[in-house]
Image 1 (cartoon, helix red, strand yellow):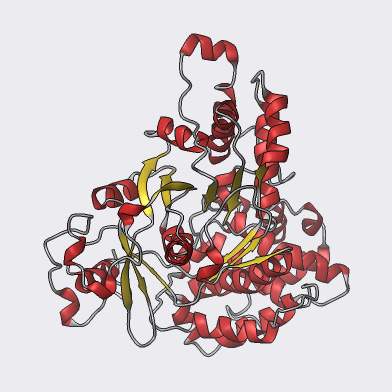
Image 2: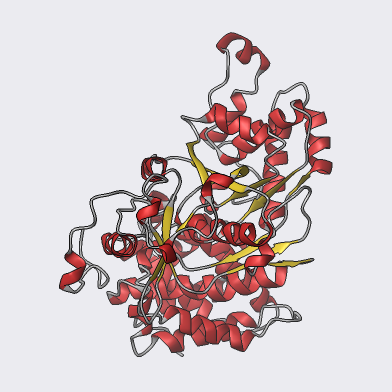
Length: 501
């Protein structure tokens, strides 16, 4: 693995970590100032979290701990990993304990978070997952599974019923198959897990539940509601109609906006955590100091007092969603693709160039024209905060991580404001340059993407046709037919890497 600036550390960073490992039995060895703010033993699983990756552990789990400090309630989290067993292998021997290190410009700050009470693998622990989802003691399900984890049809926005994993989960709902094969296999998809869990919950009494997506999708609550209903409607369960009716009245799907930059953990981060804790922590995560959580106040059942940790409950999250998606996420993607072409490794590397800050500000100025007016949102101040956060020299946020899964991220981050601005007669030079930067990356420096092979094959055609094909792969037939836009993107495609400002 090539070294990043974070890994090229001073000699003391190469010290051998302490031999012990973080766990409930060794927690007493952690310096007092770095121990959990709550007693982990006093918590029980009242939240199920699907997709227990680094972001959840640096965001919702921290808010939950702060809520527990203020208001109590025993709010523990049962975290579920979907594919890899790495998180289970890291956290289960540690009794769910892990550390969060805030990468501050004046030095790291590390402490243990204690809200994860158990860690499950969706396939291996399917029966336990269903049991938890059916339990009336669990009143909240949160999700961070990334855009691709929802298995949406890009053309309709609904559930992709042709997806092999979705169709496999639906096949398990065949009553005849059930009777022949015995207990069905654990659902392979997040939507399937929710649907089977809701069925079990209804059968066990039908206690109300809130399902809270924390992924970067506009109207994420409404999206998940639709996907769950699409799945339920496609099953062959005899109680299908009753399930749909009960879900409509007893299950809430609040929309949310989450914001915190959480880079992938490096070996250097593990060493930093070990020095602070005097113990090894295989589940350590890092994050920037900034954090934000905005939630639609439409919960169906009891929940932690997340507002005690700074979360904001509002009647409409849409203005906050659009601001984050179009300004933060949109500019993040742009500088990631430009940075790949320029040989940068991190966001801070891009911001240290002569063009990074100007590009972020110019892009935000263009995209902000697509935002509706909203009380309480200071757009110039928000852009200033983005520049400050992106330039944090302690973050070392790898741009290849941001550039991954572009075919899923770009439609909401760029194409929605592009359509609105062009329809209103606004110029879109930065958005055209952004599309060119992404297209150039699919051709020259491809990042991980579920459509990687289709993106690569698009370049078997001449550039203008390749660009139209790429737009079609993004579900943007209307933009593929916009000759002026395709011409503008083509013009930028082979221009200097930095867009004209």
